[in-house]
Amino acid sequence: MGKTLARLLEADFDVVLARKLCASGNPEIAVGAIDETGWSMLTPSAAALGADAAYLDAERARQLKLLQARRAKYAPLHTPIDPAGRAVIVVDDGVATGSTMTAALRSVRRHHPSRLICAVPVASPDALPAIQALADEVVCLEAPGNFIAVSQFYSDFPQIDDEDVARLLRM
Image (cartoon, rainbow, N blue to C red; front, side):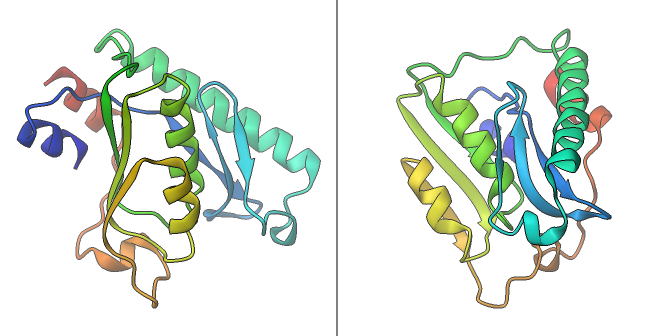
């Protein structure tokens, strides 16, 4: 999605690395997110989902290690673009809790872009206020009241693996 948008806008393409912190026993539920610097945040429901301090420390370490491995894999293929002074559009397939997008937007914001835009086709209406507070503009095509998961709004929702990302970075 991001590569297509960059091509249409005749813009540069890069990746922002952020990961969901998964609930204990259910990797589909986010209890927070982390970026590649190690900055992390928790959702208000983290404790209710069984995320105690020891679990969260281990989950942060696990996800940070994965982010570092991905950066090491992608770096030889593509030098990261400095967003300072540039208009940046952070694109994702959708926003459920807003945790990962929060981590991504905060990560980019630290580099002082001239404008920071979040673009998603669908989002939970509950997650939008937090995202809107972090971006200069949010472009969201749909925020339906019956939102359960991002995948419910796609007829085909394949997972993108490291090889897919590497291919996009080489293009």
